[in-house]
Image (cartoon, rainbow, N blue to C red; front, top):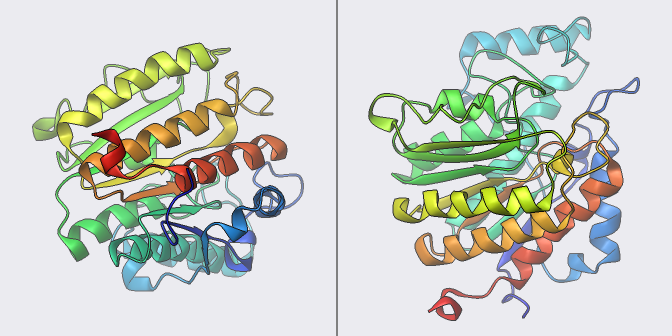
Length: 325
């Protein structure tokens, strides 16, 4: 079943394609093109509303990040020398602008959803979940997810936002920014932090203060595949259902798929399609269908092309709420 016209928006364009780092860095600027080739090969460009990215304003970036940190990134990237963190994220010329465009793309997709122009949206180069409010980390300069969450809360008054992350790396930048916030429910399936960066996301981390119990971390052992993922996914749905989210954010990093050069999980691309379809059902039941997919990590180009387009395909084929009774 194909979704209704304009149910799904995909944000693509040179503004986000340029986000990346050269000299053999895993997060290269070719990742956008790898997604786009498969997107067109599947004919998905004719089944969705294609939207252009935009640049986030300074005020929008400050919804999540501190002014001092923004100044630091701007100055360091202007020189194009050194690092923005301890050695994973280089300061490159134009990096401040490219990172602002990633945030702007995620905001453009969010705006398309909340305005009613679509119900589901996907941004391939986005989901930079390691950046904190005051620091870069793990190839992530600005945290577009954090900005979107703050935008939804402050700009649209949403009080129940779900964040689901299936990237092989724990989404620490989002988790700890909202660890004590009961309005943000988190479910994160990732490789066990004892074996992979950033070393966080232990099962006992469930939120703090008034938010205790609203966060779910599901670490998987190296080598875990679809069977383990499906088992963990059942717990994700059980966690989300009573929360009744008003908006769903889905970080669908493709580095959890077998063959990624820097991680150790062994899922197939079917895991991403399954998660996307099931999350669409959750969104239809509780959020008026509103779900935003963000590409996240993934450093095997074929893997990310297949997994991300599987998510888009699931969005396109998602049945309306009435089909779920």
